[in-house]
Image (tube, rainbow, N blue to C red):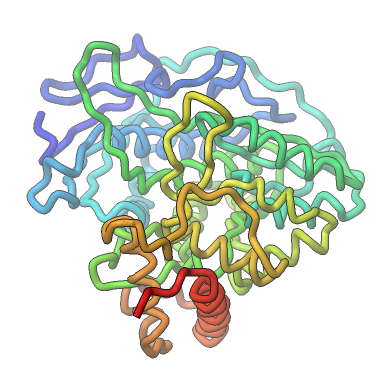
Length: 439
């Protein structure tokens, strides 16, 4: 097997059938997971239907393959050809959904995928959750990353009186678990309804001594998150899954032509959600189908910060969230810095907090306007300033990725323009802070 054409064979359990020659076997054991949090030991109040189990298995297999296939080995150092074999309960349904799934994976990762479905055999015996009544099930489910957007939605929903629970699905961020827990506790402090949390791992590891180097871009991570939330919702009969992401980062328009396509994250892009919802509708029984939505699709980062603030969270809690795309390395002494301050998510975060509170006291590793930084570390800041200086129209909405048929381009354009104003305010604020050069 070469990385230029990587072939992966997902096993239902480590002792299942051997893969064909030249295929890399993968299974749940490649995930670093605490025994109490394995994929078959979920704190859910009912078993999920087979199609939801299949969806989660496919997402776990895709994410593991994404980590094992290195982009550096491809002809353009980005686009890979990946073949993946996954066992599912109803292969005929998944075969019908295959064109939609291929469009989803291509949008999310920018790669050429071929997925082969085979019948699920040799199922491992798992603990079946106790079955509760419908009144005991959660009413709402949402992703909860510990970032500003998911915090705003969780705070708003936790403060809405209801006898039924809010279920938050989290994925552990190594080295920053304490920060995630603190943000979750702040949400619980607002609750006027039960709040439950499902925590999973996103850490894939290579066998010890294998010499395998894992890919770092992980563009399929958002699909793993969404599939886990859908699985939870299907188990507890919740018809809608919420993936909160401000409109600017959901659309994630590239700051330059070099960042087109999957070079910019597409996890919550309307085109991605459109294909994910189509996959679900094609593999699920009509009575148990789930719809995935972004409740913050028309809000800016500043709007989201205002939602969290108005829900009762103080500024210090918002500043304790995790937003960075490339968190700094953990330092041996003292707490880890959670934000580099230089990546695009950090810049959008800064603009949102500035809009909602007038300042941002988050401890960043660096400021992009620092004249002592080299050009490589300030490239996002310079690209942002150039992007803000040029006109942006409705045609730019579809220049990088299509929009689904039910999209409202005018509303999406409006949220991007308001986000650009918040970012321009950040630039003006930074220019006032930056030391003036000697004449």
